[in-house]
Length: 460
Image (cartoon, rainbow, N blue to C red; front, side, top):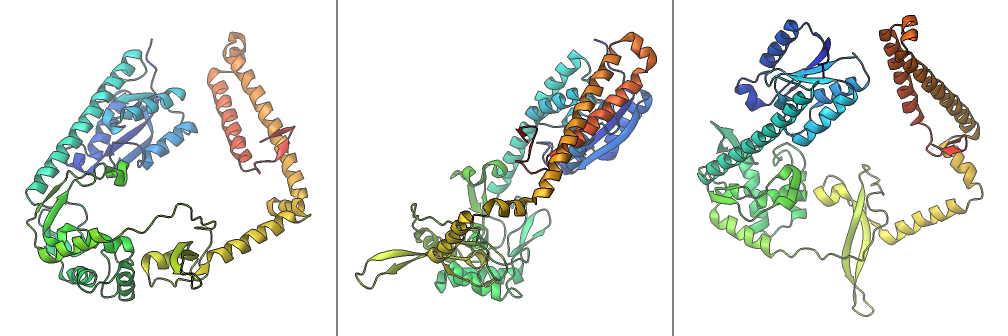
């Protein structure tokens, strides 16, 4: 099979921070690609670049995704995408397969100048996948080496980087040094919880009312979660903990393991060992709230707080009936901002039974209204508006049908040598592209119509 002639191309470059330090800089990649294009007389129609973005997947690469959108709309009618090295596209084999398939659908070739790969031929595509498999293996090996290095560093009592916790700053190659102003807040939280017996709610309330003195690391308000993070962090007692959460980006809390590093660190502790141990005993002895599987809340997250508009969430408390001494659960809704952060809002509590009963009664009243169809029409659009939409939709459908018919005629021109004498091939292809673009635009417009608008006996 003859290779496709490449006249116009996009170029794509990518680098993560570490790779830039190793000579994979964006400028170096772009220079090499431009020299290749100059040598082969290829016009560069566009340049796309993702700086400091990992090659694990394409999810966070906005420039790459913009390039795919421009290819889909035939913005520049390119013949190829030229890259410096295959790993610039992706180190994930599944992504590579999807990318090749996408480019094939748009008749676009991938050229990797360092790997000397051109996917216009069968062998080029074979080597593309082969090199891609090695790129994925290389990525996995890099990840493994990095994890082993971080584990070794942790075992030596050294901080592994990432944002330092409240109470510490960085100094000289990721060493932790105490930030005295923040350390006072840390000591206060441990003291209030372990020595004075304050609960999370009371601690949150106090801290949020005195944010000018006791701010979080990012200067936001306190919540139960941030207070618990402080109380559960062994760094404050002088320890280094690493590896408790494996593959956090994918597994989240499911990746929690008991096989992790926990050793005395080289940094200065903020609290004593005795206070840390006492706090952990209190935390472990704290009884988890009882889960009530049969307690339902109809409006949880739907009702809004009247003060700042935050969601109202389910709350409950146990009460004792005076008549017989029996215990029962009392349900209500409360402001989520108050429940989670305290002092940011007010509880604004409302009885769950009362609120749910009023909402259900309003729904019943609305459903029984004999003018329900007219009311819905008013909400969704007046009758005359709907008639106008139906008229417009029929007109669009006729236009699409005509465009499809015209497209078929132009394709007939391409396979008829006699007709090609009348209209040049380039002109025909341009007409087909214009037709496809117009049909795509009409299809997008149809998506904005009401979902149950009927036309020609069908429902969109």
